[in-house]
Length: 532
Image (cartoon, rainbow, N blue to C red; front, side, top):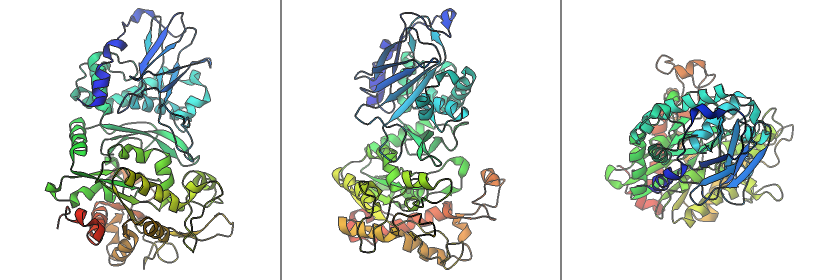
């Protein structure tokens, strides 16, 4: 039994309550206790819990070592919005310019006249997220901090719960939940329900998305253990069902592999929703480059839209790093979104600078950043991953970004040339400008780590495929096979996506990364694990 399931199993008796359906009430009552379990892949020991009621009253508590909290709710009025922050000094749940804490929320729409249960976990956080988005908030944290629990409607909560159950019902049943139709992640307190929930949460990654207009945390994102999206492409709505047997087998493979490859990156490497097939990142297909008997498991945590700074500040890296062991390989492939440093841009300019931007080295190779903000140096941001990998006994490798199919005018066309650089514009929108690919090379040299020049490889590849480049980059013409693209403004034959790949392109880039490993003497051990 995995640690999370074992911990949850031991809690089932303590959380069991007798439900007296005839005694429900929308209002408050005297002597009530609200209890619940704060958990994700593990119980959140020592989590800080806040309960907000419909009148704006708040109560606080701290979860015990098992992740269980208790709050006196006498006098509180439903609905109750329960939020939890992981233990520690960091209380920032909202802003991506600094490191975000791990935060989740839950909602209880009715209070019984006896004690009540409100668990807090990734499933309840997505339910609150759906409700928050329906109320016009970017995500659950903005609702939590608004102090407006009174605006939560039972119908919206029930709709979100049904959407959640549709995505997780098969997984919950496979995990041992007997009465899936009546399962509620918020109020579950039965032994089989808690154990089944714990088993499912072991193979689910939880985070909150990045809201582009504000650079704040947005709606809740859930993926399986291998970072296949379950829900999160949009702020509310249907899920892609969790394949629990596959996820369970993959968790065992991750933990039992001889070695793991962790992919740190952006949309060009990411794993995508089935709805968006055939769009693929190279990390999604990279495991196929290794021999079957090599015992290698690729953990592709790359995330669409993330820069090197935000990938860490937003907690995406931490989801993967918990599995890192000595001897693993960490492929660091950022640069596309780090270039979002034009503060003069309309709409997103200041937000991009706050949330995504890192500045390249100057022409002499010296890191550039605003005074007191060294994390805004691309060089320093990359160095952080190098240091963390080495501290864990893993081998870091830096990769330059894949090319866009742009010519010297920075427009779609040929010959494709190097574009990962910034130049000052008429508005003076850049605090610092420079070359991002060169900065990656500077960082690799200074840190003494291997460098794979993926940009040079993909430029050469694009220029060798002038006639058929749309077979590799995303340019969909068959809307019957891929209906998602019928409504998209990019990624079609009429308007190709010059940055992202479809399957054939992702596989080609994965092969280039494998070639880069073979060409690097310091990675000989890893080259021997690759297929010929």
